[in-house]
Each structure stands twice: as C-alpha cells, then as structure tokens.
Length: 197
Image (cartoon, rainbow, N blue to C red; front, side, top):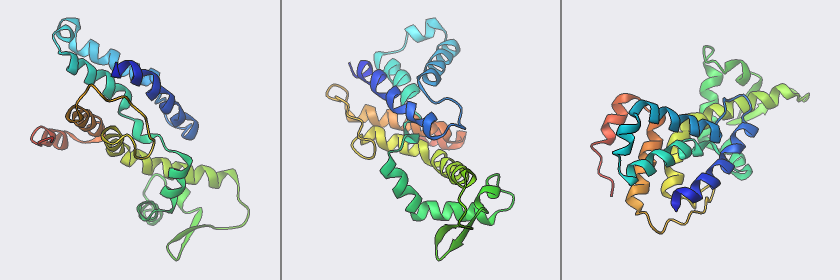
C-alpha cells in the first residue's frame, strides 16, 4: 500500500527538478526506473526472488526517494539564498579561482556579507550564474536532505504519506540508504555499525 501511494506521489515532486535545474540530467521517474532495472540486472531474477518484501520495498522506495532532497519550494529557495550556509558556500567559490563555478561567482560582488550585482544591467547571465551555484549547493547537500524528508516528511516539502503500516525504524533505514548515494565507500561502511533507534 505504501509503495502504491509513493510511486504516484514521488514522481510528481521529482518532475520539478528538471524545471528548476534544466542543466541537470533527468531526475524524474525514468531515472528511478532505470535504477530499479539495473539493480534487477545486477542481482539477477533468482536472487531478487529470494529477497523479503521489506528488502524489495526498500529497493523500490530508495530508487524513487534518493533525489527527493533536490526538490525545493519557492519559499525554501528564498530562505536558502539568504542563509549563512549558502553565503559561505558562495564565498568559497568566489575566492577559489580554480573552482569550476568561479566564473559565475565573480559576476557578483560580496559586500557586508551580502551577494550583490556588479552592475545595474541585469541579464540572463546573472540568473544562470546564481542558478548554477544554487544548484551545486543543493546537489552537495541533497542526499542528507533526502534522509531528513524521509524520516520527517512534514518538514520542507510536506509529502503526505499514509505511513500507518511500516514502522518508523524502517523509514530510518530507507533514509540511511538514500543519504548514502553521494557518500564514499568508507562513509557507507560506517552506516553498518550505527544503531538506528
């Protein structure tokens, strides 16, 4: 029942990623289905048939949920751009001439801990520049945000989910799976030794 609901609701939320970040590869339902198909190919039908219903549910849900942290409301975007975290992230790019986004950051000035236009003639270049930097900031943090939204769906996006049959501890496992997709191998191994309460 949970999966039947989520496979309809989550893709609707994921569709907004490509409208906000058109320069990203697709992060919609087709991306999720590609992951599922690749997992089946990797495991093989015989091994998949031996998995428990919870194992299968975790594969399906994590394939859909792992990028949910890239979905932002307009209010969240406004708050993110004003946040200290974003300012320091921007400043790091601005100060680092070797950073791939430095050419966009230097289109702006930093004055009194604020990001300001360099001149009054605002063009699409400014919009693209801040969008690319904001997208990188969100991409950098999105896997941990995915975990937060899975465990506490009423923060941020308010993805309303029935959640009356699956225990919260299983959602915490799902959150850990989704948060691990941007981590390195050593960080992922540590997850096995954490106690999820």
